[in-house]
Image 1 (cartoon, rainbow, N blue to C red):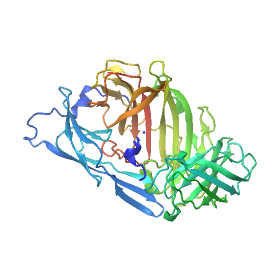
Image 2: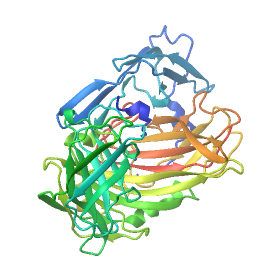
Image 3: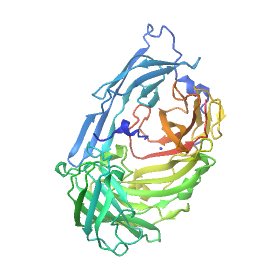
Image 4: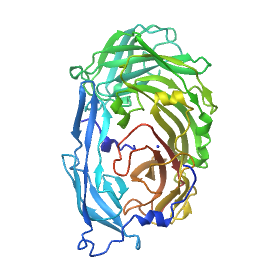
Length: 500
């Protein structure tokens, strides 16, 4: 079965500043008394998990099987700080249930994720592009022979996609048989399909079509280099995991064309670097523009994959850019919604002792309809949180002795209005002389603080946190963690290390 929201572990964006002190974080919790049940304060926590797959043949909704998922609701006593666990269960029909939970704020644990909310009804479903299918995890070679290219040039690359299953990936030039400069055809281009970003195995009997696009390097009217959809090869392909397959055909130019222009304030993204972390390093900045069925504005990965119509990452500089109209050819249905993503990447390294450091990558990103990018300057809609703390100590420094019951708190972003926050906790370890970072949990909240439930932090280990501020009007990630809508934006902060 196609990996879904839980198995992939996804997540997967104001004016003035203010700190959420102890009062704000605790006021919504409950001080649990022994006779709460007799007072009629106990309630039932419930949830559903519908997964909607959007395909060329129509939409299919099926429940995500929660029967093997750990479900527990925790309350926290604001006086003693003690957590109390209320066991629940999940079912094959996608439902979850936790009976007899006292009123007040709860930490609902579903798998390894905590939803911090006063709500009692949760939607754990998602919308995903492509039919339900199986991923290629074993080496699955594909060999392509084709003609009809526009003379290949250095800087061109290939965009592989299949719209019905939602498969996609890139072929940049390290593969055997990749076309040389000036070539208009190639034979025996070979790549491992399992290395694609979403390698759903193709089945032509289900309506899957293998598509390979020539993304051509061009120059905008103002001299900005960009890559755009140019020609496309479509072929029939049915795959068996671990077995080689081959396709052949001719690249043709789509009849539909379009233009896309942006006033890209790269300096506004880069100005937030030290808010991500004082030692953060700026890495990349890019804009992608594509098209999706309108319903995919609510999908988990609606923006971040092929088929791309325009890809803009012209250089490593952080100066502002006005592109003028960038031309592209469009093989996608005219009724599809054009969407765009702008992102700026940042990194920070972490090391245990003398082990080789691990590099953690985060971003500040904006997802909107493409028309919004063309109508106004592209700049951050939400900034990083301010003044992060572990307990009452500044979180950008490395800390010890924080306890296994530590809290994280922060002030509001200086840019935009956060609708939710997501806190990812990573544990550091070593393997073969290298530092390794593994995410141990995520906590979704609408507050400016979270307390770490029992078992998240273990004595003798070292951790760091990523605190994401999200802007997604009309959505509550604490009750619907996988719901998406446009516009949306997020920004991350990386803390220093901390240990109990």
